[in-house]
Amino acid sequence: MIRKFTHNGQVILDLNGKTFLALRLFGDFNYRGEAETIHFAQLAGRSTLTKDDLADKKHILIRSRAGGRRVWTIYRRDLANYETVAKAARWFFVGPTEAGAWFLTLRHLVGRHGLGESITAEQIRQKAQEMAQDPKPHAYKLGIRAAEILPDHAAGQNGVLIHWAPDEGNCGKGNVMRFFGIEEEQNNGQ
Image 1 (cartoon, rainbow, N blue to C red):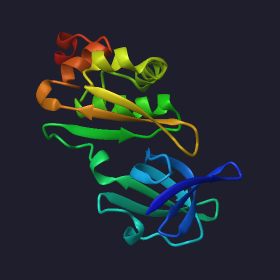
Image 2 (spheres, rainbow, N blue to C red):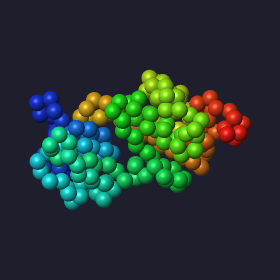
Image 3 (cartoon, rainbow, N blue to C red):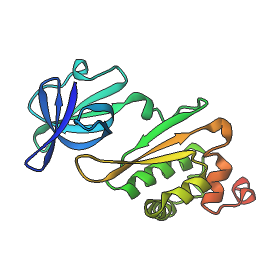
Image 4 (cartoon, rainbow, N blue to C red):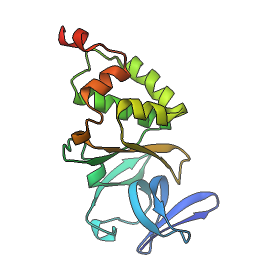
C-alpha cells in the first residue's frame, strides 16, 4: 500500500512501510491519502526502494544521487512512451513549472513533426507561457483532445497530462504549424 501524509509541512510517502520525503509527486490519492495512481514521483530517503515496493509493473524506477542523498524517480511507463502512435495515447510532461511542462509538450510536438528548423525555442517558450495562463483554448487550437493540469502534491507546481488521438488528426503537423503561425507552403519550400 502507498500512502501520502504531511509531517512538519513536508509531504511524506509511505511505500510498504518504507518512508520517503516526496520532492515531486504527481498522482491520484483518495481522501485517506492512499494512492490510486502514481504518475511521477521523485523521492528521497535512506531506505532502499525496489520494484517490488511498487504497486504494479507499470512503473519504471530509477536510482540517482542529488546533494549527497539518494533520490528515487518513479514514473508510469505508458505515460512516458512518447513514440506511441497507437489509436490513442496519454503522455505526461513534468517541468519545473506549469509553463515548463507546456514547453516540453510543445517542443516534443515540434520535434515529432520535424518543424525544429521553422520554430525556435523562443517561440515555443512564448506559446508555453500563454498556455500556462489559459490552456484550454490553446490546447483546442493545437488539437489536443484533453489536457489535465495535475498538481504536484510535494513541490506545489503543476505537470501536464495530455490525451492524444492521432487517428482523429489531433496534434497533427498541420495543427502544430497553424498554432505557431507557419504557412504550409513556407515549410514545404525549406
